[in-house]
Image (cartoon, rainbow, N blue to C red):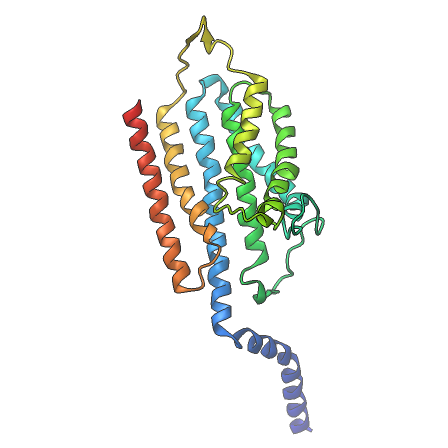
Amino acid sequence: MRKFLTISAGLAVTAVAAPALAQEAAEVADPSANTAYILNTLLFLIGGFLVMWMAAGFAMLEAGLVRSKNVSMQCLKNIGLYSIAGIMFWAIGYSIAYPGFEGGFIGIADFPYAMQGVGEADVGTGYSVASDWFFQMVFCATTASIVSGTVAERVKVIPFFIFVFVLTGFIYPVVVSWEWGAGWLDAMGFSDFAGSTLVHSTGGWAALAGALIIGPRLGRYVNGKITVMPGSSIPLATLGTFILWLGWFGFNGASQLAMGTISDVSDVSKIFVNTNMAAAGGVVVAIILT
């Protein structure tokens, strides 16, 4: 009887473990694909939190360059816009931007964005879908940060947040779908690496529209002359500059979108070098011109 119970228990354990063993076998069936999946996902996650750190850079830069009476408002705007961008890109933005509609102008996929279940992984994609969402979301938030600095000290917080709601949930995702979502710009052969047009141009045009509508700060120009308005803290603005500089390595480097091969890792390192040289060159030119 004891022998029978022992055999039965052994069979039960084997039956329970069989699915796990089968899953493990499936994961190691192609070790190179599994390794590439892990490294690509890691690239998105590291790049994503570096770009998220840029939100702190924008906040510090803007807080240092505005007058003391507006520092609290500028900090609130920056943490608020990042939060709104995260929610809106999850609720609808990502579904508009991806997977895209070939040759189209606008469309929508899953609503809202749905992550894979716990323990699930589609190795065929080459990276975790959630890591891709996170990396794309921080790009979306950066677009709104560009507008924040442009309209600093002359916009109320509620209208600004309403605009961020529209920008991050609809305007930016539609523009992204035109190229990264295989839309009409992509069909024309247009290419954008690291968002030079989709992120910075979209944010820049939105900021320009806001500046044209709102106009300059009251008292900034008197009788055709510029009135100097010293910032609250130059050291704080300098800290923000260095934080942005650091974050840009994630912004540009992770835009390689792959780190599973030797050539991809080599390209990421070259992107880091180019990013650093571009920033250094910009600083030197600015010093010479001013």
